[in-house]
Image (cartoon, rainbow, N blue to C red):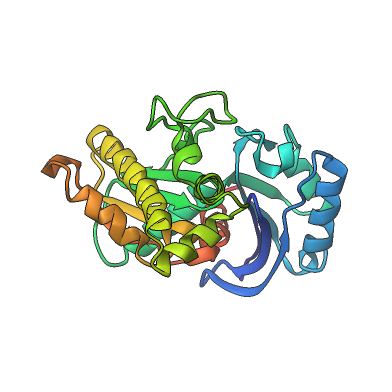
Length: 294
């Protein structure tokens, strides 16, 4: 039996779990808040406190992280994420902490792989897009049953509104700036003249506030537009929706509502993610366990 120490690094939390690679089940899981600091030493200290209790039981480490992962170095495409942490030698640092072979891919790619293998236990999807709508927006692609692991596959920075707000990546109107949980919170803050989180706005929408509901619908409409564009480009069979916003009550239904308004060729099958918050952990463990030289 091989045990993986899986790590999922996001904008708001870092999760770590021991995963049985034979069954792909989580044995033990812990989570901490992501340090909002530009100082690598603070980030490294947080990783040490989280990983050291688990490392002695593991054979290797598989990391799913937000941002760009290039040769083991983590770069935040949007400096607003990860507290502005940039060009952090993620794989080397975790390898130093754990003394274990360590590998990393983007978190949305890891989640996409897990959702794909889960989906294909029931059907024969060939081309699948996974979108996570949470603090930010990310995505992973499986094309011709192959996970795409390039460093530039970040759909959160696809422009959906040429006149939209300026994104931290340097472009205007990226979907992350228009439809993410952060964007929903900013829209609520502007509209209600008080500081709001995305969760605050969503809760107001569930309680019947029409203005809050309009913000949520605006987000879902933008996501539907992105899905339509990628479907006609990549011949997608299925789009899986995940993330704290994506899995919030009714959000997937709202996306489906706007997709249904598109012509037939722009309408893939829309389903909710099955693994929830553990998709990144399980996907990274499964992906690297399947590689010959993990």
